[in-house]
Image (cartoon, rainbow, N blue to C red):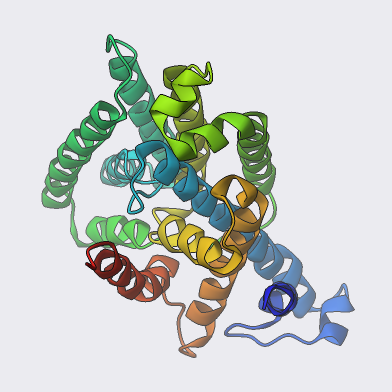
Amino acid sequence: MKILAIIFSVFILCIAPFFGQVSLDLASVLDTKSMQHKIFFDIRLPRVVLAFLVGGILALGGLIFQIVFRNPMSTPFTLGVASGATLFTAIAIVLGFTTSVPLFAFVGAMSTVLILFSVTLRLSHHDSSSLLLIGIALSFFYSASLMLMFYLSNLQESYEIMRFTMGSLDIVGFGSIPILVFCAVLLLLVIYTYDYEVKLLLTSYEFAYLKGINVKKTTYILLFTVSVAVGVAVSFTGPIGFVGLIIPHILKSIYKVSADRLIYPIFFYGGVFLVLSDLLGRNITSHTDIPIGVVTSFLGAPFFIYLLLRSHKV
């Protein structure tokens, strides 16, 4: 089954750039003077790479959040990073700075990260639930502020804000890819560096303390790194839900090994899942693309309900 999954994943990654509203063939793509060549290398291929990197970051971020908060329902957006990015995007659109939306979204995400960790560092003792509660409070504040932005916006601005909240992988060229590559590598490097600590946290906080681990420092470094990587990803694509929820659970059920041994598989299959979701979104209808956030929600919501039912099964 694992071999078949790898073969299927590689197959999806290879064919994804060739399918969409305009079908491409290899001969046309190799002709440097053709329009198909430009579509492939300026739009389709960057889009697939973007989807793979963002999917990997979100899936791996979900795993770390589930480990740190010891909650199988945690996602990379639990702390309100996506809400902050969405609010600042709405502000940019209402103020007329539509060309600077990624910058505003990044500022919103990073502002949320800084607020979260500035507050929690003042706590006298480590308590991940306090960090979680602060994130929830910020999410409610951002939601109320976003409603205000909708109230102040006109019809076109409201549409643009709503479109961002649905997630989008629209991209031209490879300009933003190096930034995401850096974030993905940084995330993988930090998690690899703290592999031993992650393994102990999987057992319990108390066991990690007994082994001499600085739990507060470790969890904050992991959460900060994940939040920054997710914040950068969201600034380019908007919030894309459920990737960080379903991929870690699926991989753990397939491989049946400790989660610390699934770092690279979860990143890889998270990327493949988002590429596949985008491939479906681009080909279900012939006249328009379905927003990627809609596709992942359709796939993820039933699985989320399944997880709830299984967690409460007697």
